[in-house]
Image 1 (cartoon, rainbow, N blue to C red):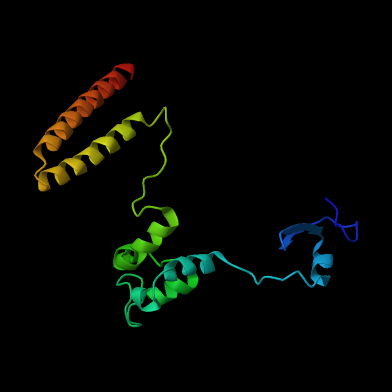
Image 2: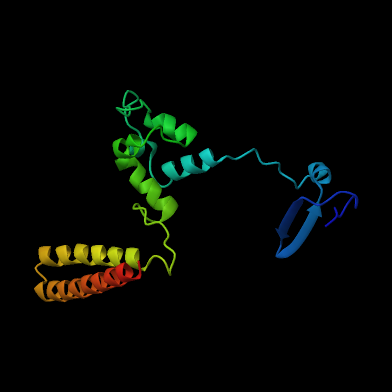
Length: 176
C-alpha cells in the first residue's frame, strides 16, 4: 500500500483516529507521518520495559524490592538489577528470588509451573503421567480435608490409569 499523501513510498504507519464517533484511518510513509501533528513518535520500547512493567504491575514498589545488599549467592545478581535488564544471572536466581518472581511469572504466563507442550500422538504416555500426578495431588488434598469418598474415587481412578499405563508400556516393548 502506498502512502496516501506522497503516493510514492510504502505506507508503514497506520493511524486510526476517532473524534466524535467519526473514525478516520490514515496510511502514511514514515516521512509524511512525521510531518503530521497527529503523529506522536513513541520512544523505543524494549522487552525489558515490558517485563519491568509486569514486575511492578498492581503492587507497590516496596512489595518486590529486597534490600540493595541482597544478592543471589551463586552469581551475585541483585533483584533491582534484574528489574532493569529483564534477565536473571543464573538458574539459582529462580530459587533465590522465587517469592518475587512467582507473581510476575503468573501474570506473564498464566501459571507458575512450566508444563511444556506435548505432541498429541507421541505424547500420550507423558499426558497419562501428568494426569496421574494431578490426581495424586487431588487425592492428597482430599485426604487432608477428610473427604474420604472423594479420596476413594481418586484412588480408583489412579489405579485405572496406572493399569492403562502398564498396558501401553507393554505394547510398546512388544513393538520394539
